Length: 251
Image (cartoon, rainbow, N blue to C red; front, side, top):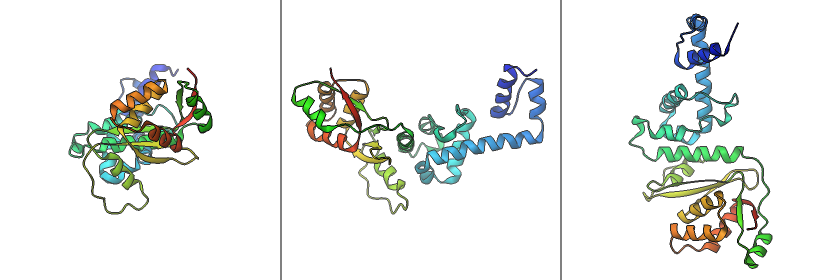
């Protein structure tokens, strides 16, 4: 009879090549089992390549394969559908010693992940600007609700958005001259297609506050603290135009 221990040991044999269960150990000793394991790992590596195309483009196929395989050996998929595989890949990349001389790569991976999440997110209706303007004109302190596809990433030290967005193009030309400083990016999907743009530290603070359910006045104060001199009205208009919000709630 096949029990739960058998299934756990079978997974152990797949990911680690060994098992203490006699039936699983006998199965793992068969030559065909090695082929089966390789097929599974290849599927994981291929899924990571599909989910992190910019990172693969930057490091090259061979290097990416090695890093992706190392990740797959430590992180089994939690879903048979691999389109969402690799949730922790950016953090894993940050710990790969061979990539330590390229400290912007984890940020690039994070933006690849943000693109996938924005692409796969549920559909949401865009925010009705007229209704928001009316509420604000009445002095109502509302809470803005993020669109399901809204994602953002900020790097304090590296121009990850410039690097990522250049390489994300179908035909990436010569790398532009970069100002080696931190950058932030917003990814949205207002009309069925993922779009991205650079944003400031204040906009990131504002979005994070909205995500926590903070009211708009406090969120605006946090944004100005993160980016002194920020034009809140202009920032808010740009975020709304980008499709970052789906609705608002009254206090």
